[in-house]
Length: 151
Image: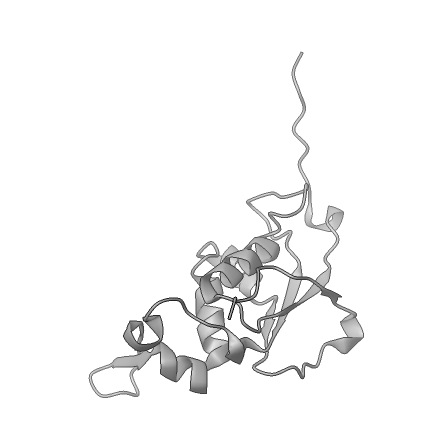
């Protein structure tokens, strides 16, 4: 007796909106759990070859933290034509203070599949440095992903 594999289409999967508060959360763990929601791996209808994930809104991304001495030692590299020599280097401390949305986006993008499917998934990520966001009409569901830091 052979079992049939159910093949889902994009119309078969419903897309929800989730909101995540990033206050006192570790960056890597938060990014990996956001990537799981964006890919749709938390759903029983998960299919790796099409986008079945949900939309994610992240607020307070300027309050994430990094373990150990990464705030001082971790560097973010970018090859830009605007900077002399093409290479731009920023520390994690500078990224948290001046570019917190870019830092979280880079962390999530690193955990998504590369190519056109991954680009489609990362477009469903909305990151805000404070508590104010402009997607209230979508009625997002609040979700607690990782544990907060013990102080």
